Image (cartoon, rainbow over all chains, first blue to last red; front, side, top):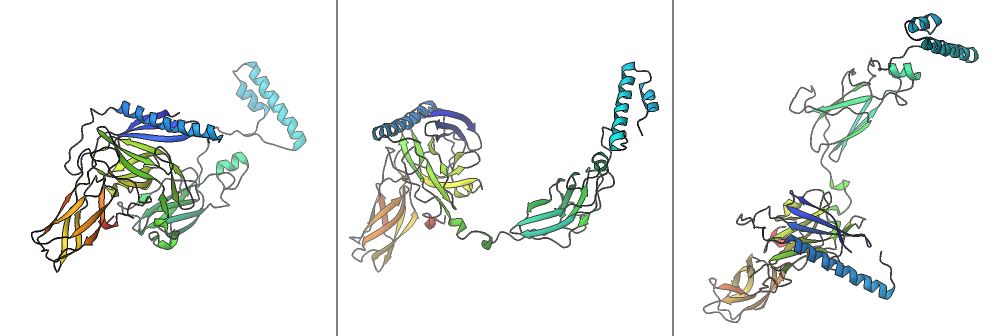
Length: 84
Length: 377
């Protein structure tokens, strides 16, 4: 199952970085949330971000990844193939 | 100063008797050893190293310049021995014992008097040092020291050193093209915000493989949230921070540690930006289309119609790549009655932020310029 390994704000990239790790397969997945520090290149308008529900989106992404991982596990068990 | 009974009595005067007895015992032990192995004179050695003087003799000094780099090779003087090293250890060679510090400096003037270009590099015991200085003509000089206080005289390398820039002959064949990846970068809508996804051939959530030279490192998949709608973005993987960088312009991704991944046209929440097209006629027939702009956020090819007062029957179809018009095909040039003031009306191509839309794939093999050549990328 994917777990949050670390998370931090990278002000240079303008991103909230969430690094996920799945210990069984040693897979890594990145969730990066754009914080809107840069403006629209055309009109200069900075998109407001206050209404963005980061927690819900992160939880949804982790759920999808875990569902995908669960499918792989079911397949491996059905066919008796090791996951590595 | 030799160790003898008179010196012991002098040193122990005024101190407890145990000190005198201990010193005499040590003296007796040394005398006993001397009788067996020959004379050893114990002398007083300060705990603080003496100043090492004079400095070492001149080191060997060689410079080669190639492919934008200056390589300095130094050879320590072999027969010069530091005074304290000789005193304590019995005289090792330089290589075996005493460290010799070398201080290099460079300048555009052979007199090393140009303050604006004189650079003094930190002293180092390394005998090989490299500097990057492509297309720069510099004079180099060297001085050496045991203690970084007493230095020998400067020796100036003979002649100016000017390494040229890296030549094509110094690179492997096809270097700039010998990299790619198997990443897909696309965009889907998720409620009020678009998602940019980076994934490999295993599908969404899977890592992708990068190909560079003879290596195939894996890079993690990613979910990039809250990217502005309708934006064209260049995605690169930052190998130092181990995160993805999303930039508006291609040159913003040119930092050395960044790997190009793909280009994506982020989905729109509403109607896409339609392309602007201009017909090209010859003898009243439609023979070509000038793409003034390619639009953005297109999920299906838009419908184009030639608007004319007198011409009829011209027909063409548009193709899209990454949410933008990438080409066209004229199926019918018309009845030959079109005039140069006629126009093209474009409609459709809408994907109102409901799954898919926008860029469907990185589609560029990791090389930004491969399928963007029509736009000068």
